[in-house]
Length: 106
Length: 394
Image (cartoon, rainbow over all chains, first blue to last red):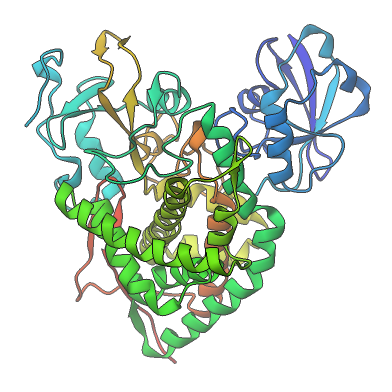
């Protein structure tokens, strides 16, 4: 299991043990973390699982694909640290990853 | 009646999805349960014959599995006319079609028209308020999304009733001839506007679609027609019915009305739960290759209807699913799931929020007028056709 910390827009922290192979979005859903809607169910089609990734483990993440870049244009208040959490596959070396959820996904 | 040889007779349910029997004291979302209880997949012999998935987990999985369940057709029996885009395209073609449409519904674009929508909603509510009652469907539910959409496409607002009739026939009449007739009418109407916008492009959605590209080339005429037609279907029908079901729920639940007025900061969860309970769309898919699911053989070309109503009202998704509870956060597929989940969801949510805020601020107490007819039906699109409300006038 890999520990991932989800921090809400108003600072509430939740640490979830996520099974490698799942996505950061699925980890949030299974762990009951609010703030990630994932309307499309995790296929990079809706932009509602947007998170900001803290710098500490950002280099462990695979690069964004073209689809994700395009969908981030649609997501609310996206910035340089923005990712779609359905596109981040959790791997063992991501232990301690911190992601922040936006105030709203819509 | 069509039952192919590979369909076990015990899985055939003698119900037409366009004519699901009304059950007293139940609504169209609940009416879909008539298909439950005989296994994860049952077969309706009407509309060309098609499967219906009945379990929430299967419905969700099938919507997401575009490789096994193609969107080549999304309604039974068939969509007559140019394929609706992006929804009737499969990956990988689908991605670019979808991106071209999603740029219409960015945060900035929806923010830009929100004040306009609010002003319009307030004017419509103030208009009916002194009367102490209204037919919610024609006086508000239909008007708001239609006028908003017609403004976005920059078409004459007085065309809305004509367009509404076309869309209603399309989504609730199973007769292919009737569907074809309105599809031709709609196509003629849209083609007229497409020609005008090609001559003098503007800052509107039709002009945007005309300028769209696929694989570096401009859209073909069929692609422009297919995209604008889908935007019409999506913009003119779904929000109207969603607002109708929400108004019906609130009319019978004063405690929910109070909660919404007193908790503006919880609007996100409120809307999620209302969306879950007020499912509208129940689409279909086409089996892409022979496959077996939980012991049932699905043959290539078979149609499978995936009722959003059965997902959202499944006890596995929400305990005591018929109840509306704003303190919980249950998933829903009111906007679909998978690659085709609703691209206009942001605009829809905004319209719903504005309706809730402005209606309840002006007409906090209202009920169903039981001296007038309440007409609704389950189908491809669950519809509220007539809903009379009344309220005290000071």
